[in-house]
Image (tube, rainbow over all chains, first blue to last red; front, side, top):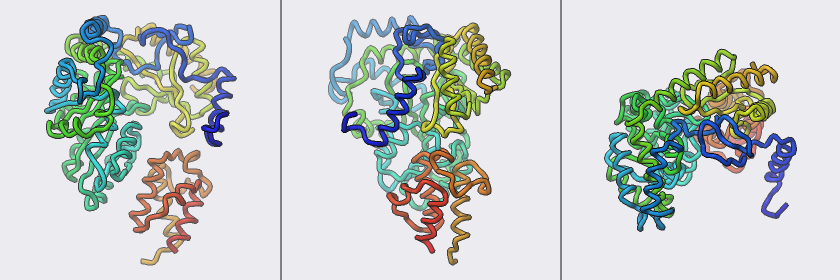
Length: 397
Length: 82
């Protein structure tokens, strides 16, 4: 091994090597198809439950058409940061659309969802401020707070009583307090209590940022996310998100008051020092936003599938935790059984993702599943059949 | 009010139980934060912040983050606070 690998790294490498030897290693498998309801993995066709492409828009013909047209006009990329030559008419059009959708004044686009949170937080708070994070927020939020220099305080997942108590204790010590939540939690599929968060932020004079990653396209009557679901468009001060889920693409955004967004455009390092999102990507994402309005059947189909699938899993006796959305965990609570379950369902044609320690505590080991609008009833029924068979074999259900 | 060893134990177990979602009575001195209670760095730092609030005492982060079990931290706090 090279000198770059220390003792702790060697321990991890040994574990990975063992998994590879047993043909159980489930990560970075080679995919050679699009991310549709069926996907080709290591040359084998599988039903796709690993994706966040919930609405299936990444392969929608109208999205592909928009991408091709933009590639013809703008080429592969724009060759610079947004600050230089990287903000095209297509970028302005998409920023306007997102700001209107969330009923905010302005929007800024980032090269990824991770960067949107990193830059959106880094440039907003700093020393003397407090960041109050739900215990299960995405890593991009944790890293953004670390980069900002603000004090990091955690409250128990979705426990607004714990948050209220923390706000009351922190209030006198800080200039500003920023509450940070995921709208929908990426490993559990439950959502944030926006009405209570809004009440608490008003009571304690705090600010609220929501990460719409797994919510946009899923929650709300129109699929416009958590604020749409609760009909509270003005509850969050800042809305951030990614295109990697609802559009199955890449890129991220932050939307909020125009003076704040202008500040981000001039101060968010991940924005200033990254190349701009390629116009072909921006064109595809814009079309995906239009599809939310033009073809609401995808949103409806997604919810039909979520309800059918969750009901089927519960009837089989699986523990899906608090999930109410397209993110569905099968909580197995045993690392070895989780890895085995994943291998056995893969052999039966189901591609999913095992989440084990240290990503979650060993007692929370799980298979993470993503439901798609483009899953057919046959896909879902086949998955339930396989899960039931393997679950019984391993004594999980 | 004078701090006692039993008060330190009671306060610390209350903080850890809340963050771990467990009953304080079910926690053991040899429970490991990461492997048994599932604490990540965010939760560990929050535990320290909450103890800091109770005792108005700022521990050395390098020292306290090296401690693996509930018993180790209680022992450390007793050493620093009594």
